[in-house]
Length: 110
Image 1 (cartoon, rainbow, N blue to C red):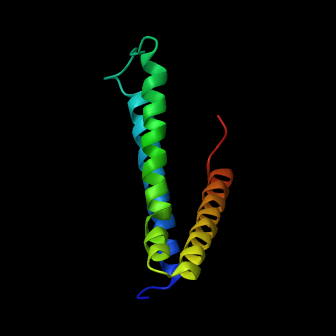
Image 2: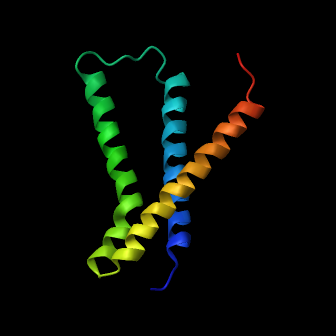
């Protein structure tokens, strides 16, 4: 195996965190933009848009999380595949803790 499971896990966790950050920023930007000011999709389009965005986002995150481990598993590197998933989850927990700490320390309540 060319790379260690912890390095792949770190890269995958960063990719997921970056994707989630970009998606959340896009949603916040769209919500606060003057371009969409007053736009409220009529029923049932609001829930349809929400659910489609959720499904697409879950698919992208699952590909980022399990794509490489699946490849490893199919090529008989089962132990490394499981280690990569565990390292990714561990790094995601660390990223979550860092962001939560940053929010608690540096964001003022409104």
